[in-house]
Length: 322
Image 1 (cartoon, one colour):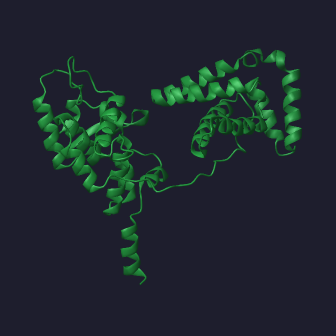
Image 2 (tube, rainbow, N blue to C red):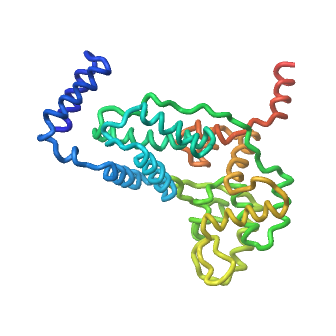
C-alpha cells in the first residue's frame, strides 16, 4: 500500500504545486490510514534505529555511527514533531538555535546538517517520507583556510625526540603512507611486506587497499619488530605488559605529547596524512594516484588534502607568464 501511495503522489507531481501536493498527501494518509497501520505506528526512535542499522550494514565505522546517533537524537529531542511531518522551516530554526546555543563554528553546524540530511535522504529512499525536508537546506558556506603541513624540519625533530623504536616506526609509517590512524592501529605484522615495502590496510567501509612506505620506515619498522618480546600479532602494541594492541586514542595522545614537548602546535595523526598528500602532488604525482593511495572514493575529497605550495606558484608564474 505504501508503494502505491508514493506512486500516486509522484505521478501527480507534474500537475500540482507544492501546496497542493502536501494537501494530497495529507488527504491520502488520513483516508487510507487503516490500510497502512504498520508504518504509521513507527516511532521517531524506531526510524533512527533502522537508519543506524542500515549505515552499519553499509560499513560505517563505530565513530561515524555514534556521531549519527548523537546528532539525530539531539534533533529529535528538540523538535517535538513526528518524523513524517517535520518541515524545512523547523530544521532551519533548529540549526540556527544550535549554532547560537553552542557558540560553534559554521563548519560544526554544516557537519550536523550533513548528518541530518543523510538521515532524511535515507527515509526518502526507503519510502518512509515523500520528500526530504533537507532538500532546500544547502551546504553552509565556510572559510577555507590553508591548513598547515609538517615541514621537513619538523619531521626530523619528531624523529630525533622519539624515546622508543615503536614511536619512531609509527611516525615514519604515518608520514610515508598517509594512512588513517584507524588503519594504522588495525595493522598486523603479517600485513607488512618488507620486500615490496607495502602493506594492506582496511579503510572506510572495510575497503581493502595497498599502501607503500619508504626505506627509512622499513628500517625503523624492522628494528621495532625485532625488539619486541611479546606474541601479539598487532603491529603496534602498548609499551607495557600485557602488550595490547594500541588504540586510536593511544596514538593521538603519543603524537600530541611529542608535539607539545617540541613546541610544535596542532600536531596530530591526520596531519601526517595531509602532509603526505601535499608532498606527493607537489612532486608531480597524478592526483588520481594520490586518490588511490589515500583510499578516497571521490577525487574532490583528495583535492581538499592538497595544499598548493606558494613557492611553486611563483616558479610556475615565472616559467609560463613572466
